[in-house]
Length: 371
Image (cartoon, rainbow, N blue to C red; front, side, top):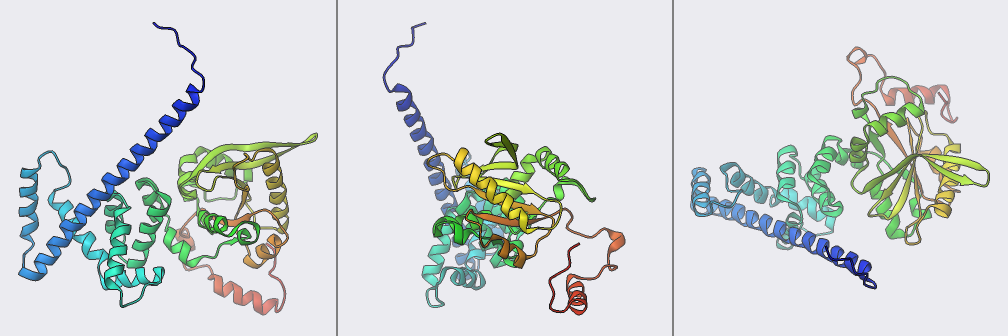
């Protein structure tokens, strides 16, 4: 065996070459995916147009499948069901409803259907075929379909992450729920927008299987025990750093419940877990932790650290006032343990509106009572 000869700067050169190879492989994979989806798009378009123009029936799909598999035996993807999906993809993304939804979200106009169709085609080409299959099979309305297409293209969601987001009703939550944070005041505009997209208003923790009161340490232990599922719920880009992460200041020690690093934000993200309703002092504690993280843990090229207070419930007005004076970016979110009431309570509890009406009658003009 020949001795290893030390070459000046070789390690740095090798690291650079490996990075370029990985980047080239990723770019090649994306190019192959784009061409495949565009091929499927054109096959679907051809079938739809021929059926409309010359009256082809449904049997043409079966015949086309047999002929293509005979001609290209080494290629996968030409099954009868997959060719039907090609037709479905083209037809779905070219309906007036879908194009109108795309126009509303993109600032397009009703008179630019051709341009809109081209833009939709470009968006579709950025999504792997397997993701298209899931979106077409599991969703029916234009708005959620477009939401998950855009999110997948923007954040690079894997198929597993996409399925988890659909199951967790990410679209419904993004549409209906207000996010509470001070990102716009604490961060540069572009970074604030990215941080807002990272944060959810509510996190679904049903996978923990908890239906009873618990202590904060137990919640933390359950989340660590189901870390993969928790990261899927957090969203793409989160990397786990540690639990009860130690921060020292002089002779004293402080501990962050859960610490993550977000690959795309390039920032540390600290979670403070609370099993009670939000209290204003929680914001002060998180602000202090973020100061320590920025001083002691933040790398020179990292962006400012972000804090997320995950609590049982929150009052948006109270959160807004609590965050007004905080210089660090902090978001406050709720978690949900159960999506539905136990069967024995169905129909027996008042709605949120009914409770709010009662409180207004009892305490007119006063702040909400604390439980």
